[in-house]
Image (cartoon, one colour):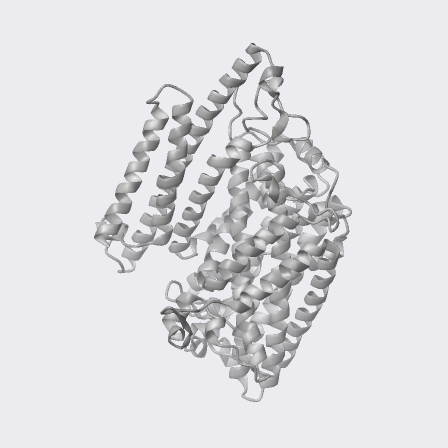
Length: 637
């Protein structure tokens, strides 16, 4: 019987590079280091600086604000990102293919870890773009209002915010149901998706124009704001001490997300080993300087006390808020900054929508996602199917989601990816010290270790609820991998790991199994035994992931309840009501495990041996426990 490969088997770098060259249609190589730098700036400068610095300075109900020390929050986050950027630069030069952190993790930490990172990157790119699209809609509505155009609130607000602010009362009703969604966010996502399908060169040119425009507008904000800066607004400098500075750094981290997006276009770069490190590090350096200067002027325009007194919706447009507060005569300047924000958000949408399909493209090429995600348009030479599916996903969620949930979920997902990228550098340094490295992070393992520690530090200052959301998202990813990826993987899947007589052709198609009448009885028996062994293996993997996911959910919820208890909130860690209270990100993943993953595990376990098998019984037991939890939650609610 053939041995079934384990889920932590790594994909050799030579095989990764060979797979990138397979096929007749490839992505078009049209980008140089300057294009990459502009793509990085286009991804970084956007919703973060235009939307999150108000909350970072003022704080919210979950965390204190940094106050005027916001500039230190930016410096702290920039240092943490610099450590990780050096790791990205080293890996991007060694593995110049699409996939970014997913590919790096696959080559260093194994298939399952690579899948986790690939699934995690959906949070950074697709879910992050949901937040950007929502913020774009807010600024666009502000911009057109200056020209006397009023867009109804029910066409520019998510359902939950509309319910809290009374917008639902003014919304039209159909059969008694209020109609409320963010049409502006949907339209901009649709337009960006169409542009990205047309080609990488056209997208890069459009991005270059947006980058130049938003840098000019930020320079305009600084130039105008300097005339109204007041020294007294910087006192007290750090009203909430180091805790406020660290919490602010965790929030403004969203403003730095994007430099890693440069690595997703490796297969569209003319000289990726030389230009990728330049693009990653240059874009981060430029944006750090811009952020610190803009933050200093912003703080000088409005005091911490006045900022705390503003509404959360006003803090979501901090630059225009600061100008309006500085002088009532700056209405014209507010309109210009709003226009620049629209351009900035457009560039971020473009780059993130550019990055996500290329990660899907790489995962599909490895068999972890269906083949449709890896299709390349014969004329435009772009991953058009993955691009359109990403656009649909972002548009649907942007129509109904709120921005605060999206930002926190994006931050924790990205920071987790940063930790594993830094770990990948360490693993490759130890495992393959002699492999050529066109770029090498200096000082040995110092920067990778600091990158891991600094990212973990920022995660600690995120709201505990974001940890539960992240655990819920990973549970969904575990289910997808166990059901599809573990079976169809080109490295460890059923067809690829089959006996040689039944192995697929070199093109990786699943049609490589010989017809039964073309094989001997021994070959058919060997294949049947292999299929049974593989089903048994994937059943065990699925059960392990179901248990791990459930433990992650319980741990994240327990930590959330413990922190609430320390603050004198909630009913306590050991109260039944704390666990059975309605909570989507706790109960939905449990339901997925019970209704989807556990039945598949049980079926595979029993099909691979005489029932009852230990794996099948355990899967049914876990499924019944999940059902019991769901019933108790419903009954006690």
